[in-house]
Length: 154
Image 1 (cartoon, rainbow, N blue to C red):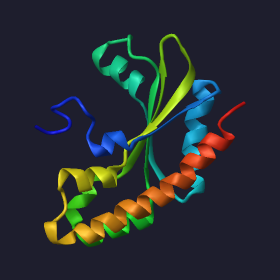
Image 2 (image 1 turned 90 degrees about the vertical axis):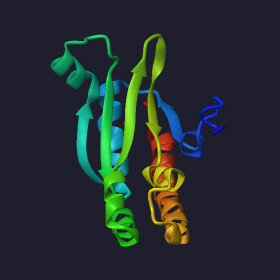
Image 3 (image 1 turned 135 degrees about the horizontal axis):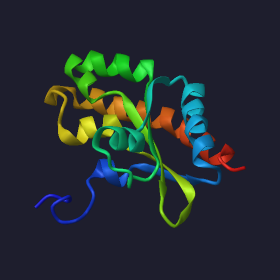
Image 4 (image 1 turned 30 degrees about the vertical axis):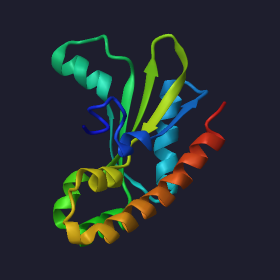
């Protein structure tokens, strides 16, 4: 039985980054976006998921949630070098969201490159390259996360 089937999160989910910010949601979204950009991640799209759901489905019960979709050129280059089909697993997404009855704004990131590794999306002969990609992504995202945590309070 897999870890997920047994109720334990898979490694990608287990190793996800999570923090909370002591600032209003409307300030947190651009703040998190800028922290990514300062680490050379390019913003692909910022989407208010709650507004999209309400606009398309009419559900107004989704708490404020923003998807910050970013891509780092080194990560993209290395992933494409392993196998062009890996681009379908990129780019990286960080989520900024609120929870009812919970004051801080949450920031959560699941690694796309760890998902590539854990889902076995790359050719088996490229496992060393995938591990190097995961390591590089981790180093780059650690810088982003440390800055978010250091500067993320009012």
